[in-house]
Image (cartoon, rainbow, N blue to C red; front, side):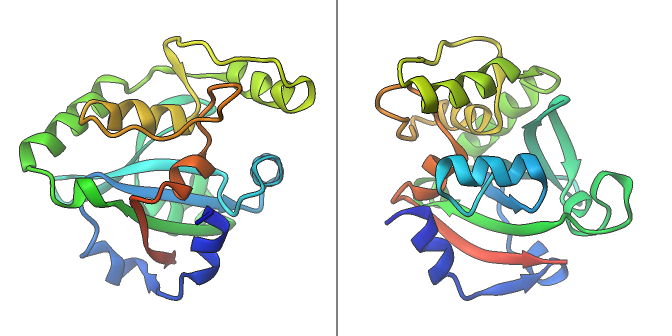
Length: 196
């Protein structure tokens, strides 16, 4: 099932206060923005999502660990639901929570390992070069991904999941992993659409 079919079939919408209580460490956080860059990613990948991150609890704070234009960072989930980029408004687009089936039954130690890797990668650079390569691969078809120490959002998530032996399928020719690939994985189940 493509991610587009998954998102169309999703009927459960939960507000932040309700969903907050049921989110687990290692859950996936997808966005489908209405911003120009987000729209470009959605069009490029024929998907409803343009971004992916990870959710982890730090004490009483529910955090999104993600790679964005400024690099790998951790922000409270409330950043998306109520104060996106300091605007005092929610993110302009859709927000989704998803869960990988293998991780749903993983030991706390395994999930802690994921969290540690997520933290170890904080402040690594965003991979602007890969963004350009992905676009060129769509046009020229002969561009391949190379490992480096910078990450687009989906590469960051895939790297964290690799430490617990969960791998997401990449584009066969280029080797890039996009948010669409993670969302379309048959082991990834959408939990809800998150509303402010």
